[in-house]
Image: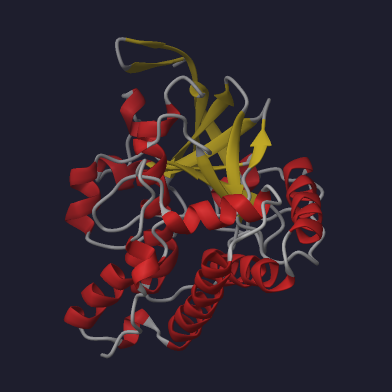
Length: 329
């Protein structure tokens, strides 16, 4: 497989170690006039990104041989090694995470440890060797949803399965990177409408080619984060985008954002999922409760009022002690 060339600008840094590419975008955002050579470099960058996006759109990872997949992954991470997309604040939220008990314990029994409700250990991720929407086969992340019904749509389960639904409280305001499906799609959530407004304001500041490129990159990534996937290798682009930028934020003195937000495929894009790198969570997110349910009948959790039915509640977590869950029965 012949990969598109990566231009030298991607490897250039300022004297203080700041990526030259980000310097150009920073100047544009601040309304600082670019010099003649900088304008030429920006044009080359814009052409470069359009070439890469075109190539990725035509290249389906699951159609490739193993060695080509590895080369494509390395190439993609070099191309999207920085982000100039717009993050946005989010605050005062409760998030939900559901796990099928037998996926954790290999048997249909009650979970006992707090760690069972968090992101899986990396050794388990590596043993499975598969991509997720926002994780590679080598890194573990914490997936949550904005409501209980949405998180249930992310599961594969059978009648009789025990499922544990945990609640996580946002402890302080932080920024997320919303990767929304389409700017014309009207979401009611405040952070989505603010993101749309932020891009509209940015359009007035940036010259048309630069703004159009930001929209093109956002559209490409949004399609990757919201597409229906049959072969999990086809999560390669979204998984490596997430990995790159979480790594960047971990290394930053002051992270620009904590998590990524994207539409839930399982709920027909009616609501949202978020993903966090555990290294960035710190004291920003805290487990506050959980319940265990037993599925009575396999059914569609995507109900109009967001409730979960056709199940029995078999236990409620009343507290936490020494890393263990305290159940009411």
